[in-house]
Length: 182
Length: 177
Image: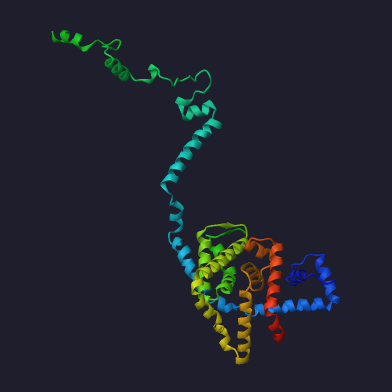
């Protein structure tokens, strides 16, 4: 039985895998019809390739286009210069970078710098270790602690209260005045 | 080696390796050298502008060939209205043929016209495969990558294209050979 023509075509292109390749070769040895078919296919290929274009014709503008593209995409950027290009960073990225530095600094203390002596020498006021004895619960619902004295007074004033307020150890000025006048 | 399309050295490497291939592939679709050169330039500009990284030089090549092929096919479709003009250009004797001696020139021109007509009569899916195989010399694996089909499919299409070309060129073939 003769070789399938599709196999022969793949064989011609060197794309036939073993063991088929050897089988085809063996068959071709003693089959003139298949040899002829293969030769015809080869001749067809040559005939098709003969209308291909010569390399020098295809490449006539290769250098011009390359130079043009180089000017357009690469040279313009080169003129900016290495240093400037390196330091040309946008504002948002600077802010991000600054934030990252602060974050890493604080993070460093949180994860590694918990030795009290170390922290104490750098940030004396924060030198207390955070534990249950010195961390207090801060309520976030409304309480008087959340308002300033002025706000409280203002509020009471609005409600119609007359509040007198004085600081311990200080006398009101009016009471002193008559004495100094004498 | 990884290829970055906006890297100057990588770009040059890919350009030098593939320029001719791209012009050739496009040329066999549009049959006009100036158009082929323009479209090749366009393909390389897209390559740069897309700012892509390819795992290998071959992958960059497949991408470029795919883009070139599509640009060329789109060009032909867009210019169908001007097809008469294109026909005229196709019929024009080949530029470099003029330098050769008369008898050979006639045979070559004849062969050119016949082969071109036979290839053009192929459906697009067969035509692309046989052109990439015969003119660009790509192996089945590369053709499969460029066209996004399986290698088996490439094998089948190459064979079908050959069969059809044999049928179309058969009678003349006996005269020539």
